[in-house]
Length: 330
Picture (cartoon, rainbow, N blue to C red):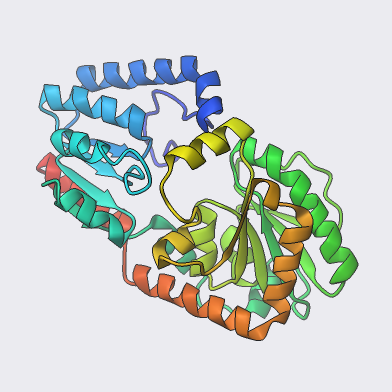
């Protein structure tokens, strides 16, 4: 955003989970006060809120009181927990743009104008173009004749800390038991792995290309699972959180699945391995099954194609910009 000319008044904190949020409470309060003060002093034509529900819903109340139109982009997970927030959001927000089709009914039933715009990852995934796997491998400096497995640990510091030891052991097993494969670890631009990884090629900001040329992937639950699905790459999903965060979430969240692929499908398309189950041997076993069990793999690929069809033709960034302009009266 800064690169595009946005004036930043506060940096986003890398907070995920309940215990992490408590530790960063002071920073969050300072950020909220800075945003509230800017709202009052600058009087924007429209306030665009993106995800971050507790912070942004409070800010929406300030905008409502000041008569500033509010566009909410990326719905809080009201379908998973705290469904009562729908009424509060409907009372404060002028329009909401959602990423997934099943979210629309939650808001329309509350009388809030709602539009399914698609997920911005679909725009990113489209950037891989029509290049073949061999061409992508050459572009990445990989052997074009050898198959590839991608291991994605996530991007937030807490995720990296918990997942990289798992990634290291999975990579060691691939090297030992699947010696013909190349193992890659795609990381976000601002991410540092903090691990001495052997037998692995690390890529920075090349996730799209790495996934598009991969035969299978192990992916930390999050947006990357959707990116992997849009690339058409079969995967196993894993995740580790702090003990307290995980068990509190399990008690509060009322959904059968955690990965976006399974949530969008309404059934188990990909295997989810969480907490103790997210062990290197189990992740590797699932990768091996994906690579060797053809009917299992084909069924998974078929499920991923339905996700691709769901997002086809959507241009969320363009549409959300249009909505912001409409609310601002431009």
